[in-house]
Image (cartoon, helix red, strand yellow):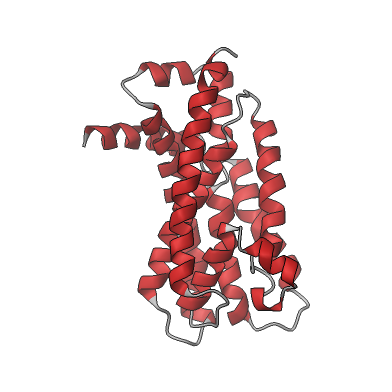
Length: 247
């Protein structure tokens, strides 16, 4: 219980200091929304088929919007030393960052999810599957954002550049805009290595649409991505933390 309270304290600090700021609103909310509209407008596609992609993009961008910049910013302002001097383990510190991103991404993604359920989809949704998909996906992308923050730098723009170099290409081969069944063989191969693919597929199933991958596989892959990304992130942060503190 004590460990959770300490982790929650870090999460509250992140939400108070970093979230609902201009860059977060632009790159976490407006950018994916306008990107989605740019692709959808002018194409003769039913809104129902676009709903899973919209929800997936909201999850992907908002959950990973802030965590890449938190540690570099705190390294620059010299607040990271004070956090580590407190009775906090590295896992609690990073867990707090992930928890804040998880809650933010989950909250924002509920908006397009509710709009899709109430006004777009004609098939009764599988609410249990939808909830599980949102939870697993928000957690996975929050951890992914933490992974981007692992390089020992005090320049937030550097890690945000790396983050966008990964996130932007990912959305084009993950079934967000084009169903995986319509992709060429090389596109399907790339899609199998993207967690966003399995989010989109699980959301399609939750909203009563056809999927390329089985639902069970999509949920399993999201769990594996979350666990794997957490393990890699912890290893990289442990290796680089001493270099970060000497900056």
